[in-house]
Every structure is written in C-alpha cells, then in structure tokens.
Length: 99
Image (cartoon, rainbow, N blue to C red; front, side, top):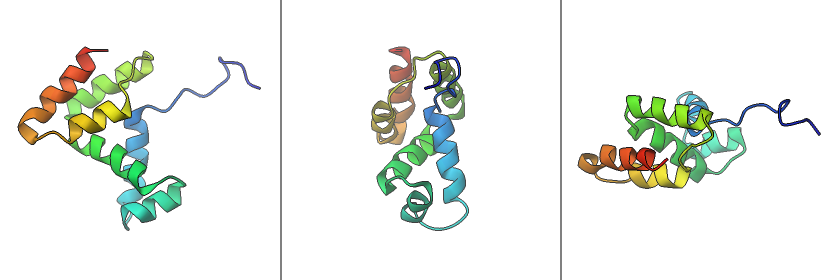
C-alpha cells in the first residue's frame, strides 16, 4: 500500500466537474457521459451543474479550499446551485465562509 506521501492528491470538486464536463461537451447526454466515465447520470449532473452555476471567482476559492483540505461538500454546493439566481451567489459564499 502506498504511503500517504506517495498517493495522488484527491481530485477537487471543480477538477472532477471539469473532467465530467469535458466528456459531456464531446456530444451525447448526461447518461452517455456517465457511461463513459463509469459513474451515474446523477453524479455527472451534480458536478457539472455546480461548475456551470458557480461564479468563476468562487470556483477558484473552492479549489483553494480543496487544496487546503477544507473543501465544501458536493451536497452543499449542489444545494446552493439549485437556489434561485438572485440567491445563488450568496448561497455559495455562505458555504465557503463556513469553511
């Protein structure tokens, strides 16, 4: 078993979302992308939705928090992504402030 120092760093929510989106934009549905990636359609939808609805400057903050080991959960980010547009950025900021 590799030591902690030898293990690859954990993929951040944003990194995974970008990877999923890259497969999705090549054509096909969320289900097609999920099949190619070996995950569920819901997982692809959740990650891509967060990426598409998260303001760019906050995506940078999420990545930095992930690098520091203090990443917000996907569940919290999806909940904020589902808020009405006028409240969405406030929702993301409140999640990040709590970290």
